[in-house]
Length: 147
View (cartoon, rainbow, N blue to C red):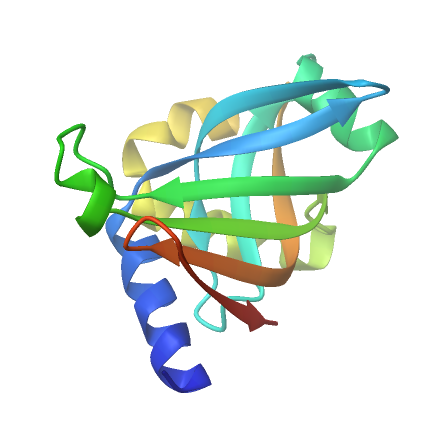
């Protein structure tokens, strides 16, 4: 599969899915969180919102390296051959002020019901600067897209 075809597959699946699992690390412990996300058109970033007073936010400040899993499983036996999981690797940080309006609009376009959450004083918009996507399909077929 060409790099352009793989990028198109990734883009389609990210657009179809509303949530993924964010993995952060605090010293020697891993922490996972189910997160609403949005993706930039060029696939270079994923955007999510979180409260500053959370374990995940504290972990991200200490260690910005993250993994984010997006999959399309439906919890059936067909998942072994039909489900596709996308493991996103990158570094997370708070969205810079000069991009806040743009990325907030992107996130809220996909998740309009989260407008009240994003507007809370303790909420911050975060982004993952993606280094690569690893796509796992048919149980063990792995393809990688560097960003």
